[in-house]
Amino acid sequence: MKRVFRLIAVLLIVAMLPLTAFAEKVSVEDFIFPDDWSRDALMFAVENGILAGDENRNLNPTNNITRAEMAAVLVRLLGATDTTDLSQYEDVSEDAWYYSELSTAVASGIFSGTSDKTMHPMNPITREQAIVVLSRAFGIVSDEREAWKEFADSFYFYDYSKDCVCAMLEVGAAKGYSDNTFNPQGYITRAEVASLLYNLLDVIADEPQEIPLEGFVLYRGSEELPEELYLEGTLIVGPAVEPEFSAGDWEITDALILRTGENTDADLSGLITKKLVCAPRSGKVEGGRADTVFLWGSGCRYEGNAMQLCQIDGTQEADGNFLEVSIRSGKLTFDGSADELSMTADTELKLEGSAQSLVLDGMNAKVSGSGYADTIVANRANCTYDISYNSLDDSLYQSYYKEHDAALDTVKTQRVPCTVEKDTDLFSDQHLTNKIGEVSEGSTVYNEFHPAGDSFQVTFTDAEGNERSGWLYRWDCFIPDEEVITWDSDLDYSDATKEGFVNLNQYASQTEYLIWISRYTQRVIIFTGSKGNWKVFKTFMCSSGANNTPTPQGVYEVEAHYGSWYFDYYMVYTATGFYGDTAFHSTLYNFDGSHFDERLGIPLSHGCIRMSDVDAEYIYDTIPFGTAVVVW
Image 1 (cartoon, rainbow, N blue to C red):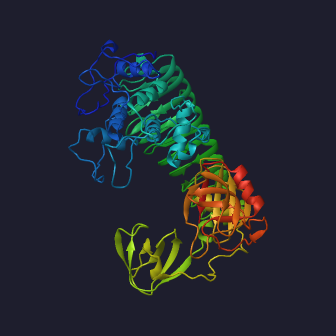
Image 2 (cartoon, rainbow, N blue to C red; image 1 turned 30 degrees about the vertical axis):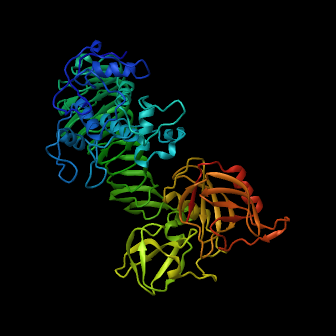
């Protein structure tokens, strides 16, 4: 059982009851706990007031938690009180029980909207979202950025959560299931939230004397911290502490995390630690001996020296001497010196100091200022650098990323123009039951999908210049049977362009493979890797759907093995299905084993992807079910 020094007045709203008051101090004997994995965590939550039961002392451990409830739990547990205006969110009422707590969660950087205008406060929170808000609430960050890949269902993680998942895994708070899945998009229960907090926090202290000699400790009190402090573990300093404080002689072996409030003025000249996380609402942090300093939160200025300085997010400032400085997100003003300063994503740097090497690894990175870099290494597209420098190295950009980053403008798709022969109705479904508009005679539409029957799916530009899509009567349009030059099988994109197309589109797959069917080049490209890091493995010639029966554009997955298929006049071998009856298969054969049609590189099928025998067999034997198939 975790050590507890004081009952904390924190209440998690119970199902069907308003959140109106702090939890009472209660005894665990008043509750019935399940005899399973959640027992210890639930007892910890009750002892600390994190979970409260209903009028019958029922903890409802299997109930899902809403976003508003999660916000209330975290801001009360952290001791945060600052608020912000939520009027931009149309689904948040000032009269709601959760308004104050949700406002504080947004002000503290714990929560953000689901869009510019929505918060969805009463929606159940997913496991992935819960990990993110916990990481933000307690300032849990990490150098490790690949651990999310260890889960069998890692393809379900959104990019925004991956660093948080890695950080929470590192401290042992986030855990998967016994089958090595995480279920990131599944809803999280009260018991699972209790488990996350139980795994994370050893001690919740309201007074300095409650801080132990070891453990993962949250200090949420307001009293001044002592001049001397030793902790074998991690200390989180919450926002209730006075903004101005100092570390006289502090040794915290693992990490000091500052989740302090506005106008923080922390003198950490006496600190020794491995990791310092600066995440106040605003202010300055000075001094301290740390291997790595992380900047996160609304924004602060750090002045000191360390091996590494890493900006996670926000608008920050830093001055000091560092071997490595990295900007993952946001904007940094840097007055100090660094051996290597690197930028990823759409980050900004105002360089007032110096760097031996400035590496631009993110598209659209921007650098300005009066500072100096000996060498600028510009690897990605659309980077700008308005500073003084000695030499420029853009060899990797010229040899690879120039084509990779331009892929979305380079890659074309097969489009079959068709003429509408008379005024016709436009429908939202292939059964032509829900009319949504009209298309006039003489209009040009593009055949996107033609299933069996009297309808086909089209895209077009209407008279007002708007892009439209829908379903038309097949016989009201002319679909040309003869060759339409909207493909070029003589063209095979470079590997850099192929990889840029799937990586920049952020395509994901359930397996280590991904397949792109390029209808324009009549190629099947197989990649290995993972989302955002796909590499070309093999490229095969193919024949996709003909003008009347194009292979439907979309993202599908390998789902079936059909073996041999027999038709009226021919047969095919090794059919691998990825969308209903749409499949990869061999060229066409007569029933006696001779070729019926062995052409490739021309759009001529009924929607399937014809390939050479050996290539179709490779997909049949090698590519696992669940592999994503992108048709474009």
